[in-house]
Length: 506
Image 1 (cartoon, rainbow, N blue to C red):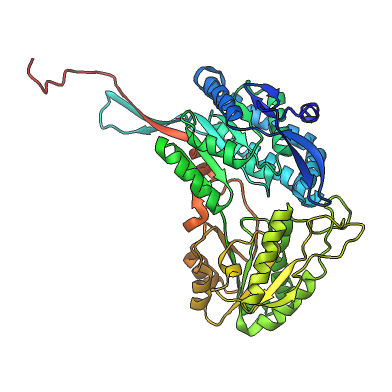
Image 2: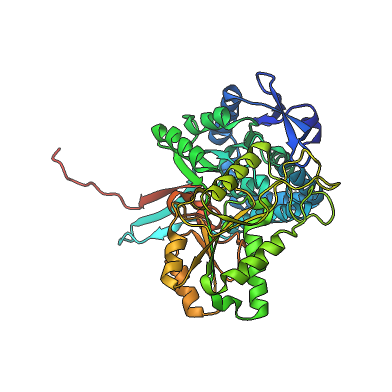
């Protein structure tokens, strides 16, 4: 792959097409969460590196070719990138597994979704009309609304889906004709570094794509406040997102924030009336809570189940959770990998401890697993955990854990189910399980969440929009609205037969 030589040379910062080390010479070891051992070394950039990258992106936008490249050519480049991602799928999937701790299969699926995102935005811009004509009420006036690129975009991405989340920002930013500086998480930067290499290989002009590897408190903070950045797009936690918005406010730059979630998975008894229905609802509750060890902003971490089926449902759920095979993501048969860091595992452990102190009942998990050939002793593993008899006053129910922890609440009526599901400061995603079509539509309509699944959990469509209510963020990703985030709107009014106005004497 294109990044391999540069990675070994510690040159993981790219500004204006030049790969180089950090100005300070600082480096950071990238840790494999399965065994806590370093397996890569990257440059540790700071404000000086950030300024160089922003200057390169500014130069490329103001004076370079990319913003003026015809839409058909921009779309063709995005499709070439998708082809390169398919070519490198196995290597990128493995790298994502080692970097983030997920299984190789999850890594491969992520790469497929990244390629789909590039194809989607290529097709979207290629099929657009050149502008929207506005009727001015006169044959002598031609009035049209056109869309232009925002300018220099700062893209700050999270550690849980490194390349996927980067693609949700990079693909529409480039499709719209922008230049960008991306800051991947300092914990999981490797596949984003690789993507910048693929963009160059596909023919993107130097300076259009820039990357700075480094921490959020230096690189991310400087990007958010930088006067030459026109838009900042951030995906991550609420606390960091608030700081990004505050830093961006003085320059009144455009801001898109995709933040956390505390997502309800509401199961009505009728969904469990048959054995197949029961089995599917339980299986999907496991998928909702424990895929990628629960390190998913849209994870269904709150199971809200109708009281009449609660005992049977939770008993089976806990039994299956206890059989999930934990281990290194590259090992055959492993279903769930480690948490991303020792810090993240400690955070999860603290939430479980507080929940038990507040009266929750442990039904499965709740501890580190024993070491095995698939689970090195020093890896950041934690067992899938089911906490029963939870209520809204518990921290584990209110706050985003971002780990393999599922809480169980119960309801008796439809109104109570909706009230529980909406009783959160977040509003990212949620699901409802029922065989009653009328109820499904009613509940979905009443849920205050950006995405609502009915009888499913976790699928997303590139052509649909992804966003949230409340403290889950502002702005939209994916779909036409995701492209619109990276554009400005201009009204061009052309008078074909200008005449004197004669408002004033003279």
